Length: 280
Image (cartoon, rainbow, N blue to C red; front, side, top):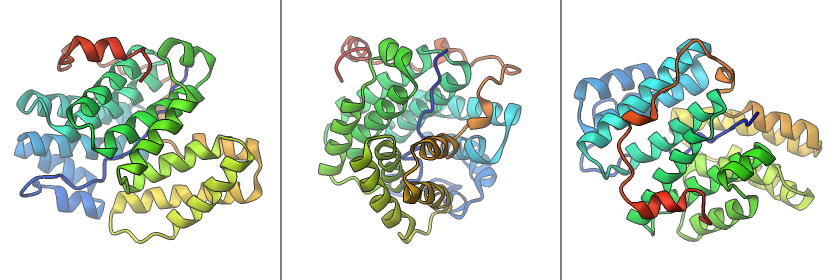
């Protein structure tokens, strides 16, 4: 069976708007339930996108089993509503792609990460100079290619494509904390030289200053991986890379029905649909 250990990334960047939505301060401080409630109550595209991001943190790291799945489905619904209001909302579409990948991880169904990739490609098409789009695509290739041969065949994921897109993101100036952690995990799965680089970058990231609650959570995860990298034990490193991923406790959870893809905002272009299993 195909497993998808997809990324949690890019959900801590501040909204690029004149004024942050209600709940943003709560999100930064780690009050994720409060942030989700405030975003939903606001009911704007910005508020719903924030609620989606908060739901991903809650379900991914703070809840288990059925409750985690319900938060995941709530996040998908929140971002889908945000895109219904503002179809080009960057963070709503980014978060939706992340959430769909988690649902694919739970169900072991390739249609969900395939749709996630399609949304990422739309982001890149809309903003070709935004490093987050390439970072998201890099993480998608990194995680899906690591899931095994069947995933690579079914979805066209490749480790060399992950490396290429991480490089693109870095050249465009990507400094996002979660993106850096995704790159470290990618390197940790590589050869001895990659693991050595992962160790250096993990040490740097673990010592970085941040005032974001979610970044501090990622910092703790990074410290776990740093310890394993210091021993350069490939089996231990593989285990830790898996353990620090989000939504680990929902794999195989079947009590909650799958979120229907048919209710999601449609893809914008035939070009994007044709790229999903192509060379991007």
